[in-house]
Image (cartoon, rainbow, N blue to C red; front, side):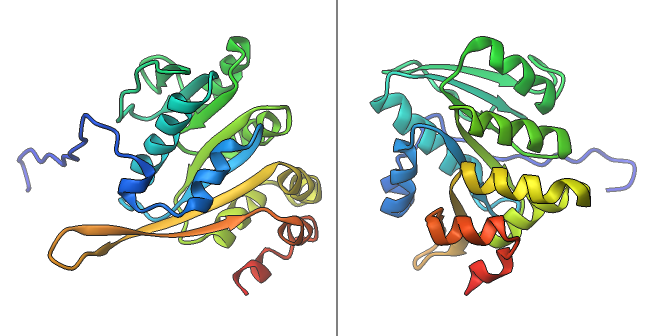
Length: 216
């Protein structure tokens, strides 16, 4: 490819597929009924996280009369108003960055917020605050499993703040959906899901900083 142009394309269907079509487990659907808190969708690059999140937002759009605000880089799936009102913002076009988009989101009084990716300390900090203060927040991280995602969130903060962040995370986390794409029989790929629900045992491990025990 020296001295020549190269182009990488990702095909995005116009229709948002349902969670059932994607093979998502019932536990993932249960997370959509939460009144507030943080829901993480994690997995390697190209594992279908955007497709799963689009299906989640579409389900809320169909079933709950809420205000949904998304901040994405880029906007991949287009959502039309159904029972909910959906406003989509694209980084670089509508907002400067994820952090600025989150700060301005508060002025629009959203009930549900989708953050395309938690990239740095500022965006993670604001996301946790939003999840603590009555918003249902969906976000993604590029990690291999739930425990690694939670470690990533805590480790981005300086040591003197980690105890506080562990308490915030324990109080706001609703669940983590971890996924990857595997070859399907007969061709194509199929999503394999793992869902960590934030029960009291999980919250206690988070408060105590024992996230590695979540793999047991």
